[in-house]
Length: 212
Image (cartoon, rainbow, N blue to C red; front, top):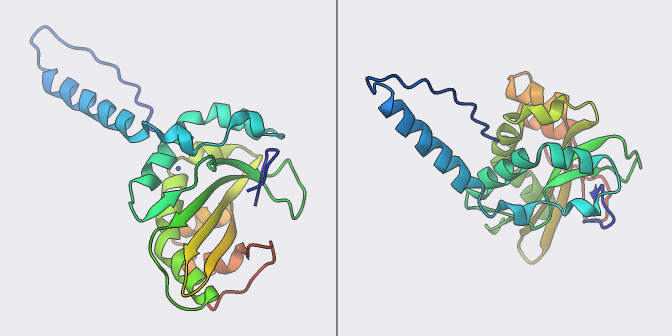
């Protein structure tokens, strides 16, 4: 995976609140709930800047989208960080292009993740187990921020994944088309079908086959 930056290697809650408090004070409870909600949203994204790509590192239009969707990127990072079993690599959440094709106009919302759980078994079996266990939640998170994928130049999601295996250090990158993610969340394809349609590469960038 290569970021649209000089060096290689998820929901924004925008609350538009119109409060019309009447003299009787009937909206006091509603106001309290909204204030608590806003407070929770802010707390969720506090400190998440450390996970976002440095904007000056972009060499493509990724910089434009990074600025436009900055709050969404913070929220995505916050929701993934809340899981506890996945660690986001610092400076990894941003917009990437596929260096295999070299097309800098087709960007992917990207993130690097470290699994904090040891995954037993051989390399491809462990990689498949990781995708089956965690990919669905990540897709739900990023697709709830669908505004990003309304951009014609943002065509999908890319995740760089690292984990500790039995005597080895595992690493894969999975490139997922936005249309396939949409098909999955709308129950038009299974997780196995989604994985099968996606490009999965090893640390050297070579496409690998998972034991589906």
